[in-house]
Amino acid sequence: MADPDPYQKSYGGAGPRLDRVAVLAFVTDAQTETVLRDGLGDILASGMDIRRGSVRTAVQAMVKLPTPEVLIIDISGDDQPLGALGELSDVVEPGVRVLVVGEIDDVNFYRHITRGMGVMEYISKPLTREKVGRHFAPLITRKTVGADAARGGRVVAVTGARGGVGATTIAGNLAWYLGVISKRHTVFVESDLHMGSGALLLGARTGPGLRMALETPDRIDPIFVERAAQLVAERLFILSSEEKLSEPLTYATGAALKLVDVLRVRYNFVVMDVPFMPMQVNHDLLEYSHQRVIVMDPTLASVRDTLRLISLPNGPWQTQSPTILLNRQGRPGGLTRKQIEDALKAKIDIVIPDVPKQMNESASFGDLAVVPRGPFRQGIIDLAREIGFIAGRDEPGGRPPPAEDAFPVFIPVG
Image (cartoon, rainbow, N blue to C red):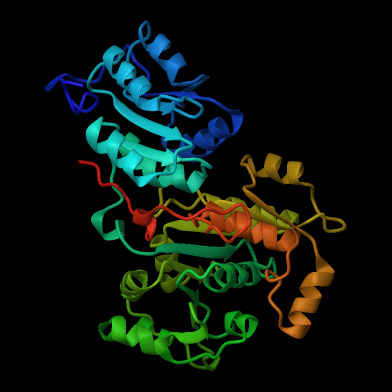
């Protein structure tokens, strides 16, 4: 190809074109279409045009259609994807931003089409909302999440819609799955310094480190974090305190962000249990997470409070709406999934069924509910994938992550 960067030229000085759509996608299957709609729906007020078809379908269509601002192409199933993308470059205007999805999970292929052919980004299947939101959304909106969020571990804030819905149990089991079962460097942060039960759940010790960090941020550095985090297992640590009820936290504004920044250098995943209370520290922890997870149960009160949490604006590092997790589905007397989704006017992303016997045994004997295989563990695995976890070869349905994906990376957009 004579021009090594056919997609990323610009016309220079030309204003927005009124005859073309903002985003046009050609996908080969229903699941890909659903994930694109869910992952990008929040940032595209006018929606996008998604059509069923291969990259060859896209080539034929773009001969007649106006070139969109952003073109998403699914190259799955094509035995000559590079040739097909080359043909596509001949029938679209050079200012288009091309994003590609496919089944090839290979670093060399990624480098070739992004650096050699001018494709702006490529992600491999299976797609998740997190992948689409993290890699595609900033390129579509031209809004970077900031260099300070570009590298380091992924920060996940788990919040219960109200007390007693199981948010701490979900967060603790998620941290255990990531750190112990999947062997990713993980830290669990229990932000309730007085009544938190995260350390009890994980069978770990509490310490004064978290309170010291939040009250005196000048002390926060990698060495401080190494000493303050309590060991749970080889690759799982916890930051948790058990302060006297008569000694309230004197929070120093900005301490949560500084703590999170240091933790992200050390750990692949920072899982935070953040109860939604009107406290500045909780607000800051929610604000500076990459993804918020709202845990609810099938009750009317939980629906009401979930609606309030959904309405909170996204933080500067968040490219998608919160993940909604329905816990204890099927509990006697509870609302159905359809009733809840109709009331929320939103889709429930993760469902964990009601397993009272297993949860009671876990609480009584101290064994994490995520350890034995079953519906609870599958729900935690689904949640892990939703937040950006890539399964290893030794895990169910897993495969090794690309060498360059040890830490989440956001592609800055000028």
